[in-house]
Image (cartoon, rainbow, N blue to C red; front, side, top):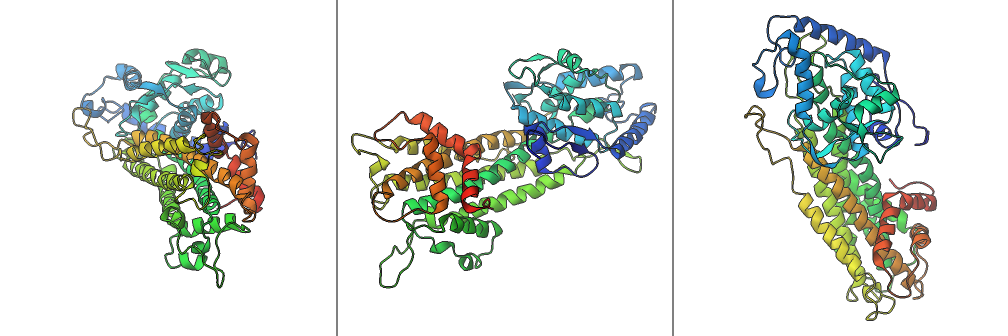
Length: 523
């Protein structure tokens, strides 16, 4: 099934996967509510309606919220209570959040609503799904979430749309903000008047940070494969050795990610005449620098970090996160499952791994430019060194990005700020962790593009040195780059060249070229 016609994602039937999230968020896959899920929703709503008629206070049903949980709300004001909750919590500001993040957030919230553990009416679930399927995307802002009772502010902006309030973008006019009421009317969707508990159920989740985690894991899986290939291409361009990637060496330290990265690098280098291989009676380089020799250890550690984060995401994807929740036995209980710590930690952990993978990539790029370390290449890979600066400032760009990624690797999840009159006195900052990880992953794609820019340029020079042919895999990447980036005879405007390299990496063309050359994708 292609991204142009993605399969429908059923909610409340089988557990969601990361691929499901990406399919809905990026490729507009439609969603549907499973029949069994709708039955659970109806059953749990009956429990909430019984409690709404009870004279005793029940949090979120007949009381205020947060520090106002002890305030009993009269029956005639409870619809206003829900409207006020959504309007007051839709307090975001700053830049608009990307469409794919908002759609991921919405999918994950409606998935929890379909669990039958939140107590909303079936029409709330159906309306949320209809908005997703109509391609209506609420305007959500960069700032506003502490990740405490979940992503309250981003989710509240989405809940406004269900009420026919706030601003949205539509599939038909993606460049224009339009009133939500207008977009709903055009799609034939009636706005909701929220009943007891429903406002709270619409905003009490970790859906924004989890959505960003799912998207990041998808992007990072592709970039880590390209990092392996880029490292291999650099080893080849610098006439290093592939002996250190032998499987039996990595079996001595059996981290799964390390073994995968080493195997990928061997596959890319297979058939190369440029790498140094031990030959009896001949001198070969004893050891390559760490940025070459230790690439599997660094990339592999990042792979294993991503695998841990994926396990956390898998648990979150089968979770029903709300407060209070309706349990299968009919109890309605308050809880702390909305706290974003599990997701926030791994978002931060991934930012550390991304920064280090970018850092080792930049060190390989730098080696290409230094005649003391590049083994026979011209200074800065310039066509006419002195007259030309070659890739000197491309390395500056990579170094500047890496420095930024190191700052972004500082964890958000340790920076709790108390809120709600000290009722919410320890928060996760998971939303902030997700926002900075997205920037980090984009930076990594740029840095890898610059490394491949250097290694493909090095192959131009190696071709005239009589050392033999590169491997089929690196030759394929070289050909791909030359379709967008001609080998310069003198310095040219470099910024568009770096942009083109980034697009080849981030857009998947490099991975496709490698897969074609190797007969199958890298792991």
